Length: 224
Length: 199
Image (cartoon, rainbow over all chains, first blue to last red; front, side):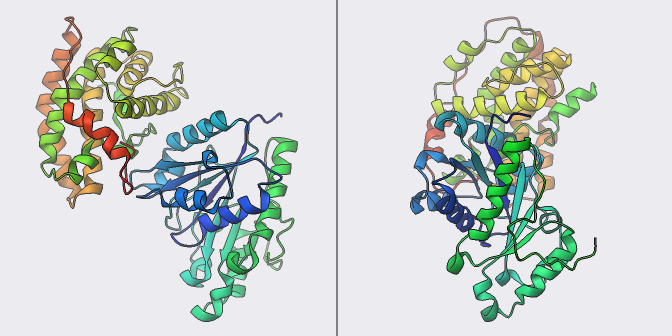
């Protein structure tokens, strides 16, 4: 099946877990090889869009913001019309793109993207939010195509066990991959590898399946 | 009542209006606290004319140029075109309607026509869409009991019903009221750095 639009990757997760930083790092890692755009869903400011513009990783016109009326989960799941329109307008204005990131406004653990908006989705949590989060689960933890556990560099300072977090997340997620990262110290290399493989699948098949490829932190002892 | 009218009136129908306050956010930031008065002002100065345009559009008379003439603010035109195309996008999964950037009241009329909804219900939908969007936005802008905002809409019900009957039967010239403050405040709202709503 030919694909004539960009791959759409949703990026969700709680406030402050590192969604914007992850997107900035991915843009930095991928912008030379992939034509990227970003739609941010800010909660009450345009801060996320401004942050991305300020990093200079993408031309300004490739970043656009959508207001969500204080309902970030509605905008990515229950009523995706504003986001769909923003993605289409971005592609129409900038010419064909390979990949558009849709960044959810920071939300709770139940937030998940509609498959009509995001072809695949990344859920970002961090060690400082508490290492019991993967055990608590929720749709983002259990079903996102990639779970990123960020800020592993902080684990020792906040009393979190990120190895346990990866293990418990993997138990919830079956075959779906988990990536432990420290964007601040190691960048987004692991996630960039996953993004490349998703884009390759999308181009080849016009559909996607989650792949463990390139995500070395996945805990392999889970029960199938 | 036709269940399809309920479907279109339901805020769970995905047509984008949850992200709009229809001018309330800027009005509240300028000091407005009497939201029911704002809702009534919008009914008189915006929604009743929009309802007439919706009824005409449901009969195939899509008066787009005429609607723009009555909405000089580019910010309001843009917001209405966005929520209009978002409504058409959702409706196109159900009825054979075009997905295009048409102002919300006209889009609502086009959808109502495709759904076979009566002229009176079409007018009522347009009036209620406006009032309920503002009432719902008020909950996020002011400390309010959600039951109170529901009561505002209930209090408005007799007026909505009377207006809808009158508008559905109106075959006179298209109305041309002017909500000058709402027109003038729309571009100011867009420049606010901290805002929840797209309009």
